[in-house]
Image 1 (cartoon, rainbow, N blue to C red):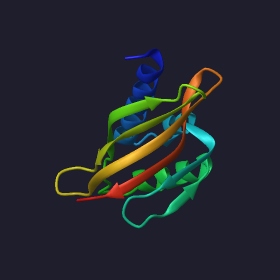
Image 2: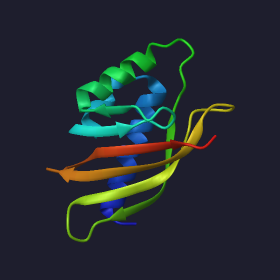
Image 3: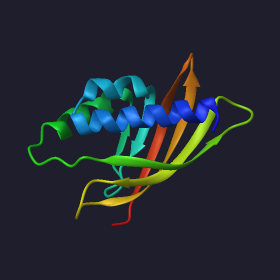
Length: 123
């Protein structure tokens, strides 16, 4: 496994930990300023780091909130640009929604950040 793949997997683990702990502030540094997220069920489009942090804060304030976990299966590094594609499964707990996702990462300065994520609900 390359250093870049290990770094991306570590960033994904940090994102998962932030979701588990309800820590929206910890999510911010993992996102590119102009990141884009397409949600799995209603295909809501959330554009920008600040907008996504706002959505996470609202989600974390919900008493019976779901805890989303992203489980990377493959990470494909570009040989020509400092970008990568992560593909995997996501789950929100027993009896709750689950599916597949793809995430585009870019190395900015010395850190990998998410530029885009697309989720598909399959269960």
